[in-house]
Picture 1 (cartoon, protein in one colour):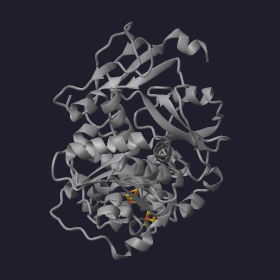
Picture 2: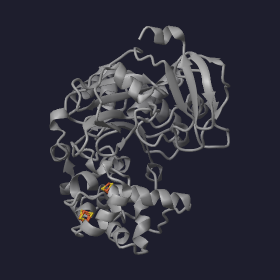
Picture 3: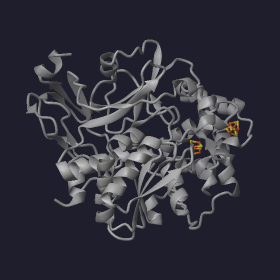
Length: 447
Ligand code: SF4
Ligand code: SF4
């Protein structure tokens, strides 16, 4: 089977972001750089660095398959130089196999893992406003995505599990593999983690969002971080959008720090969050509003730059939703983009970010404990865990299914990837947004 078709059928999507289907990124010819994104710049999340340290062979094989398929001139793994174990594991493997894949060691700044920042750091090319790395001859994949690519191509394995870090204000941070569809509340109870009166973030303190206990783990869950209510990492996230907009009107002092430190503005894009805040605060109609489409929601403005604890990130996210409903796209005639001269010295060291968000005490290694020991009694597999169209269920209530079996398919003419049973069991419910599977008795009796 052709690689693109294989990845679509096996459900491989970007594991570190919005779940863009991996097959749809692949293009044959004209690719200079195939990049593996191992920067993992969100504080307290250790998934990528643990996978690189523990399974360097799978990451490198996955990258090699896609480099060969696309005919890319070079393949690079970009990661922070401080990830010593991962650097050593990858270097050893590269030496042993004689591979021509290169390592690119990045500084410890935020957001080193933003794909447009990474592409510029490696290639010196700026991805055009509203564009994708392909426009400058690059393709970027997350580390776990490449691990899944290797599993799909070499072992015919579909994506049934997600690696996540569980950390924050808990005794023992851990990185582990969890069946897709596992309920978050069940998982935390299973691991004996106290979450009473706490806030749970899906993702890191910068880009993550508050989740409820009954939400399922998906193919894009990066981690679960637990904080006390009112902790600086979650205060803005706990505020309603109405409150955020009201505060923008009352408190924005137009200092422009959010703009001057914005990584996309510094790359030369016309994104000025301070102008958007001014426009929203005073309900002006303005051309600045469309600039929100250029925001990658990295959260730097919210967590670090703004002295008034405002959230241009949340405002931009809300505008983007509205513009998406109206099918508004960002259009530009500009073709050349020059980064701001100040870009180099305005990079924000991650250590300062951690101090600002009071995360230093929680910054302990979350080592990966490998194995299939998480056996939930039930899973809820969402039909849309990726960018594109939802999968259409191909099983019915009462059907017995096996782990890895296809349970939902995306029509051939639509963007998207198939979904699979993550446990052996019986289908309890199928509808347009989820498929619920009850596990075999033997799996849950032992808990
Ligand atoms: S979240 Fe803020 S800092 Fe990040 S890209 Fe958007 S406006 Fe810029
Ligand atoms: S940093 Fe905060 S106060 Fe300053 S312009 Fe931006 S939103 Fe307004």
